[in-house]
Length: 115
Length: 128
Image 1 (spheres, each protein chain N blue to C red):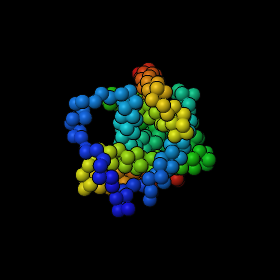
Image 2 (image 1 turned 60 degrees about the vertical axis):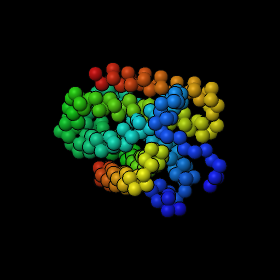
Image 3 (image 1 turned 90 degrees about the vertical axis):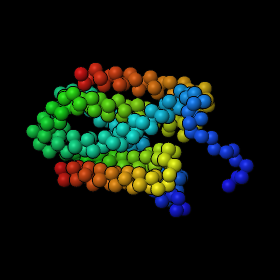
Image 4 (image 1 turned 30 degrees about the vertical axis):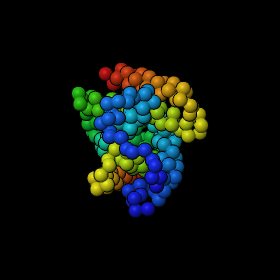
């Protein structure tokens, strides 16, 4: 079990499921943002702020941010375990990924929370 | 562990001897775009923070996204995201048992790569 210390959850199955659930949320959000961008070719600051001032959209954005962090963590774990054979090096890499996504999460929540 | 399992082959031997099938190329691109998107999260958050903060911040991001390096990065993110999304949907399909066979898998790999290239061209036209 110690071998699994840098994975997101406690089992491979857990990570597998989380990777899919987060993927669905990320896909839905991405498609929505893409269509918003294409519908508003000359986007103004006002229209952009209005979008994020919607309570529902803001909560959804924070949920998507959490999904992104989980998805990135599991994704990079998957890639790292395939290519980095040295356990020590992989551990350092995974610790770096962990801190990176944690920083992203805190910064992103700070941006979106108090709007 | 199974004692009779095949011995590991040196990676360099594999690289020299095997050819990458289209399914492997699709998978590699999914990984590369994923790593690139992971690295670009801070830039996306910087843009989100500035665009929401004030109208002058919004202008700052628009100016950055219009610059040489900025527009290239934005194009890279949009193109990577489009490919990663489509390749991911293919993955979810296979999880549900759709397109798991080798023949269909090869076809959907090609399809995903073609859609990725087309969307990269589309975003290029959209930006420049």
